[in-house]
Image (cartoon, rainbow, N blue to C red; front, side, top):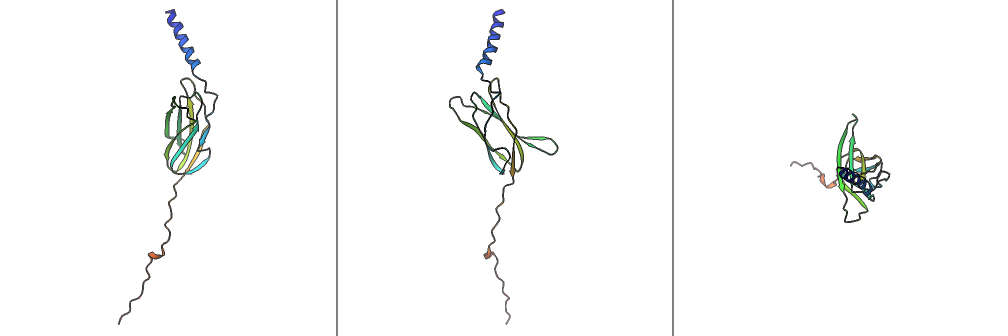
Amino acid sequence: MRRFVLFLIFFVVSCEILEEDLSQRDVTVIAPMDGVETSAGMIAFRWHAVDGAAGYGLRVVAPSFAHAVRFVADTLIMTDTLTAARSYGCKLPLDAGNYEWTVTAFNGAYETTTDVLHLTVAAAEVPEEPENPDSEIPTTESSKP
């Protein structure tokens, strides 16, 4: 029993040693920047990789006036340990509205803390139809004999 307890203590301590502490690191956002306004459609969320991260959590919410929050995305993105990616991200379809978003890097024992970023999505512009002068056919009075 004593060996089991010692093994358990060693295992717990070694797991803490093997995981890099990410808690004091920041995730550097590439796009969209805080406070940006963009058109509705597919919005690309991108950030720089954090050394030692096993994955990232992207959360996008749409706050409402009734102090309720509608989750638009709560996505986990796992890193590829075979390649050394310099950035990560994903695209999400967003309708017109105001959004808040965060991205968090994590590993088995730690995670970063992030600021809440704000994004305004404007309604997609509808192209105006140009005036077509040929569409109006001049009318003439018919003459009676």
